[in-house]
Length: 457
Ligand code: NAP
Image (cartoon, rainbow, N blue to C red; front, side, top):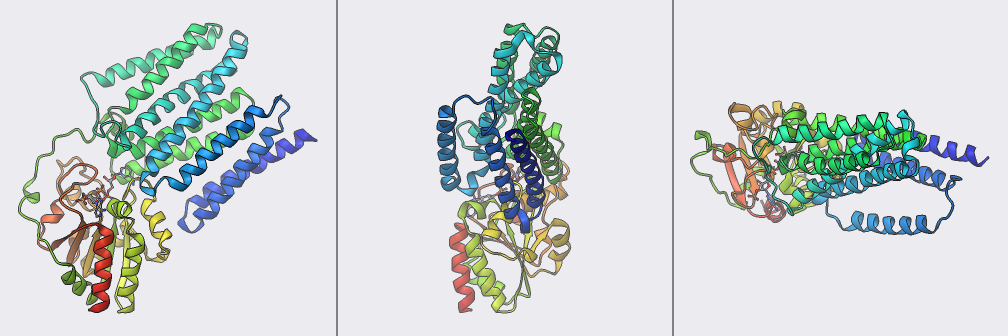
C-alpha cells in the first residue's frame, strides 16, 4: 500500500512538473504554472519521506527546517534585480546535493557497481561538481565579488579542453574498473576545478546564458542521480530541467545573435571598444516639462523598458504615467526585448507586477514596424537592446543582435542617470542622433515628475 502511495505521489509530481512548465511558457499562466510545480515538489517530497530506506527523521527534519528558512528568506529579501545571482546560488546547492548523493553511493558500493550504475554515478558527480563551482563563480561575478570582465590567458581554451579530456578519461576508466577509488576522487576534484575554469573566461553580460546552461547541467545531474538510486521522479524532473534549461540557453543566444560556443569560448566583453564615428558628437539634454508636453500631445507613445527600470523599480511609476497619458487619449504600448534586463522575461515580470495589461506588451517583430509611426519612444533605462550599432555596424561586438529600432521613431527620449554604458560596455550611437534627447536622473524619479507634468499640461 505504501509503495503504491509513493509511486502515485511521484506520478502526480511528474504530471504537475510538466503542467507547471507548460504554464510558465506564457505570462498569463505563469503564476499558476509556478504553483502547480510547487505542489508537484511537495508531492515528491512527501513520497520520498515515506521511503523504507529512511531509518531516522532527525537529520531530515533539521535539513528541511534549515533549507526552508534559507529559501524563504531568499524569496522575501533578495530583490528582483539580483535574481540571476540568486538562481546561480540555487543551482550551486542543487548540483552539490546531486554530486554528494553520487559520492555517497560510490562510497557505499564502490567496487561492486555495475557498468550502468557506475556510468550514472560518474555522470552525476562530473556534471554536479562542475555545475557547483561554475555556478558559484557565476554568482560571484554577478554579485561583483569577482571582476565581471572575462578573465583570460593565452592557451586557456586548449588547457580547459585538456582538463576536460583528463576528467572524462578518468570517468571512462572507472566504467571498466569501478573499484579505483583514487581515480574517482581525482575525477571529482578535476570536475570542481573545471567548473571554475569554464566560467572565469565568460563576461558577466553572458552570465544569464551560462546560468541557464548550468541549470541544464544540474538537471541532467539530477536525472543521473535518479538512475543511480532508481528514483523515477528524479529522472523525469531532472530531464525536464535539463531540456528546458538547454532550450532557454539557445533562445537567449538567438536573441543576442550569438552561438553557445561563442558565449562559452568567445570571452565576450574583453574587447577594447573603439568609438565609431556614429557615436561621436554630443548628447542633447531635455527638461522634464518639455518631454511632458511632447508626451501629452502625442498620438502614440512606446515605452521601452530595460535594466535601468528594474534597478530603479520604476514599473509602478511607469504604469501611472501610462494611465495619465491614456486618460488624455494617447495610445500607449510597451516594447519588450527578449534579453532586456538581466534574465529572460525580466520586463514581463516587472510590468505584470505593476498590472500592465499583457495586451499592451509587444515583442520585437510586432513593435519594430510601428516605430516610424510612433510620436515618442521613451527608453526607460535600456541601452544595449536599443543600440543601432547592432544593426548598422558589422564590426560591433553586438553586430547582428536584434534590437528595438527606437531610432526610427519621430522622437526618442532616453531616461538614464548619466553616461553609463550598457551591460556590453559599448557606447550607444542612438544617444547622439538628431531625434534623440536625454532626460537624466533616476528612472523612477524622472517618471514621477513626468506624470505630474503630464497631468498639469
Ligand atoms: P543595459 O544595456 O544593461 O543598460 C541599462 C542602462 O540603464 C544603463 O545604460 C544605465 O545607464 C541605465 N540605468 C541603470 N540604473 C538606472 C536607474 N536607476 N535609472 C535610470 N537608468 C538607469 O540594459 P538593457 O538594454 O536592458 O540590456 C540588457 C543587457 O543584458 C544586454 O546586453 C543583454 O544582452 C544582456 N543580457 C541579458 C540577458 C537576459 O536574459 N535579460 C541575458 C544575457 C545577457 P546609467 O548608468 O547612465 O544610468
